[in-house]
Image (cartoon, rainbow, N blue to C red; front, side):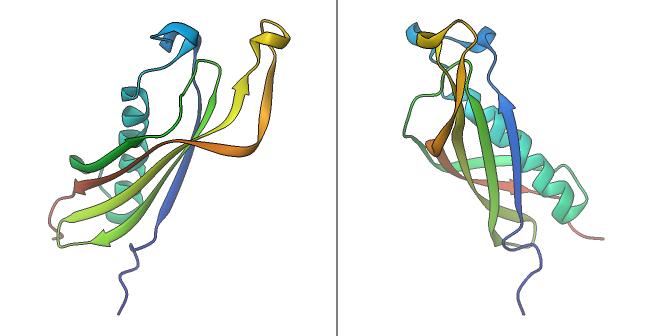
Amino acid sequence: MTDRRLGVTVTHRRYVPYAHAHYAGDLVDGAYALGLFGDVATEVCIRTDGDEGLFASYSDVQFKAPMRAGDVLEVVATVTRVGTRSRTIDFEARVVCRGRPDRGSSAAEVLAEPLVAVTATGTVVVPAAV
């Protein structure tokens, strides 16, 4: 019998404010995505187990493309394994909109195809069922 929690997917979207630019070219540090992964993992735990859970570890993190201030990120978390108290979750942060300062100070565009910026696999733990 398949666990009903397996395959649960949660998606968040977030605008990256210019206050988070950390490097030249309005680049945002990779830790920004990890914070968003924590947020979406919290909702996964609430939906699957009725508890916020705790993030235990990452087993893989890959930075694939830059994230910039002015981007809109789509962050997706999918439960890929369910243990007694642990859940393995695959994460992906995608850029779906990007600022276009070359067209004006507030110009932006929706990307034709999302740009995968960061992927990760993580483990969360939840309290034992009572």
